[in-house]
Length: 156
Image 1 (spheres, rainbow, N blue to C red):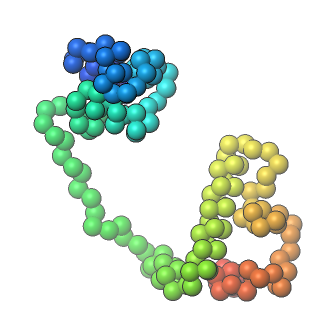
Image 2: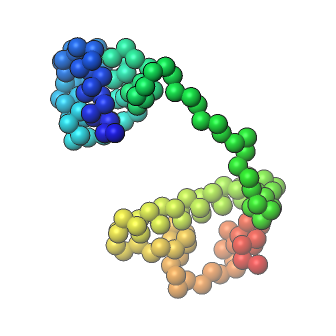
Image 3: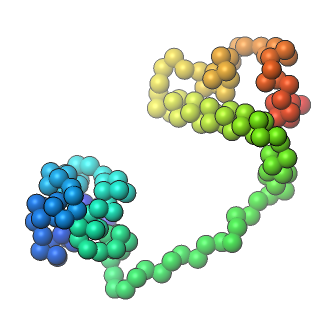
């Protein structure tokens, strides 16, 4: 289902023009037209305003059927293997400065992998690049962050 088609059907079913819906929802008629024709994908904020303008619940923009949809049954918790559980335990035992360092390194890795996937040139796909390192750098033991227990945990 294309969201633009569904939004068009709901607007037509309510007997509203693009201008009328725009005034009720606080959206420009050109925005409504572009979404309905598939030129842009609306954000959640736009969809919330759209639903308010149509006087329907947000879920009704996506749900085709009678009544309310059933909520999916979710697991109480996601099963975690023993190795992951031990890492989580170690993470929670770390001082907050070390946790912050680990999270910062992980974010840097994700950012670098994202840059690499998007094909940005001139950036090394290495965790250490945010620290001024590259794949050929040697890590000198006198650097302050090398004394952090989290760093030592991963280098043993």
